[in-house]
Length: 111
Image 1: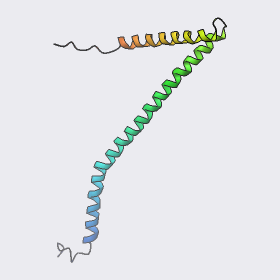
Image 2: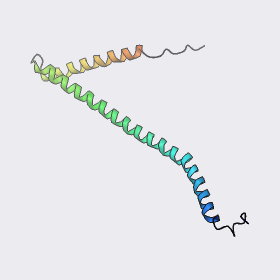
Image 3: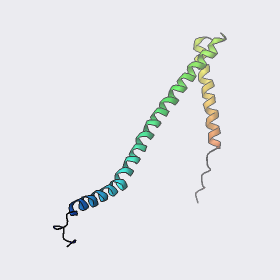
Image 4: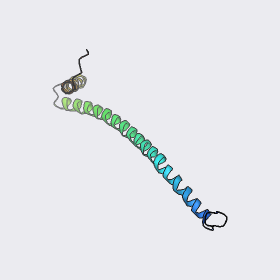
């Protein structure tokens, strides 16, 4: 009788293969997707923090370089080169902000 598991010698390996197949399908559908999402979240956060640090350090470097450039000609002293660099970089940030402000999407008027 092939339907009787006690007399079928392939019953245990077939049952183990069936269980293994279903467990593998469940793992593929659940675990692999979760791992993919978590990896994306972790890598995204690492990139975000690195980007924030890079932008901050670039602004500091830009301020210091601008101070050195203004101070090279000898037209202004060291203390004046500090506020001149702040004014120039602040003006640049204002212009970039105004440009980005004009590119924003218009808000819908409330009814």
